[in-house]
Amino acid sequence: MPEAKHDWENVPTVFIYRSCCPTCRSERYKPIKGKAELDGSSWRRCICDNCGSPYLVISEPLPEVGSDEDGDGYYWNGGNER
Ligand SMILES: [Zn+2]
Image (cartoon, rainbow, N blue to C red):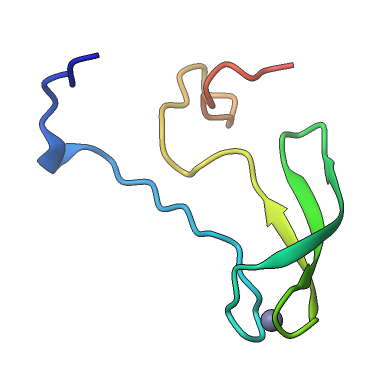
């Protein structure tokens, strides 16, 4: 598919951080248990493969960008409404 002609100097930027161990910064981990919640967030219990520290990873569903077209406080998130 050809790339659309966007003005890439003026588009919003979304930062996504990869989860890593808060102790040693290793990105290698063993997932222990995780669950997706109804509000679109999810959490995962992880054990670091490198240093063995346990940590919890939480994914939040909506970036703080986008349009709130109907003013209900929720941003459009790609059509995953339940
Ligand atoms: Zn670690």
